[in-house]
Length: 334
Image 1 (cartoon, rainbow, N blue to C red):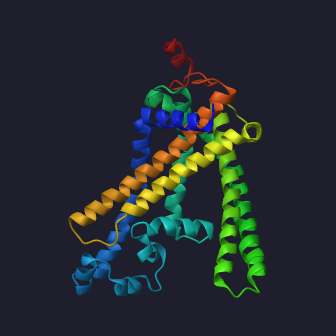
Image 2: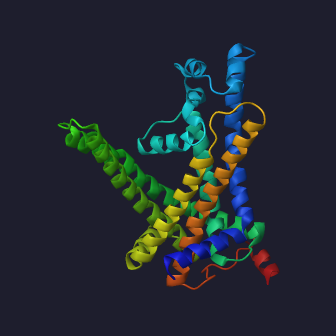
Image 3: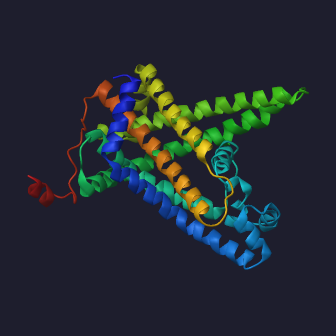
């Protein structure tokens, strides 16, 4: 199986299980709602029935927004012009690449969101690997089986990404970049070097991402208990099938870039209260749905490529999960 075939197979698998896609969107909304409600209360308390409230309802009052965020802490400090439309995507990407610290309330919500993904990852990949319905009991059984295993994998991921952001990032942007641009007088050249640094750092992030993705796939498809073993097996698979694995990853990244480009075209700016506000909300949620779909396609297509290269379609080493896992349940299952 080549990269295009794996991508198409992955898209088919994701579309055959829309409940997973929509459930992940519901999870995203559920994590975001408390933060949105808290921000709404802060805005309501600050604006009240003032003239600034009327101005804000008609568009963006930058003077008031600067006053609102001046010396602000916590979630209040995140309310900037960058949260409007496509600017939010660029702001989040910049914050990730530049290691910007987030308010503790945002970091806490993000940690809860990541923990939920870690729990559900096993069930998601198991469903895509089997390529058939496993029902809720089978899905959550697989999620529970692999949760503790993936927690161990998260420790390895934390070490890898911690090394990249804790050591490689400062070395590139605090040592290498200043040394290369110290004698430069043309801003364009300095910017080009910074872009090269970003590309190099992004390539390292992508390498870690693809290795850990295939570690998850091999852990689920082959029912591996050792996450170090799954990680080494992922590296072996990528090395032996580098062209296909790297090609598929690039195609998946291109798919994500297409989603970003489309959102950049249709992303709303600062609108008014009323129907334009709800239209902007609908477009934003459409982007969230598309982004989640692409993330699931990453896993499904990588699973399809692995099964097509090293196993066979629909193969999963572990038996179909039965909830609850007990001898009585096994007897009933027979």
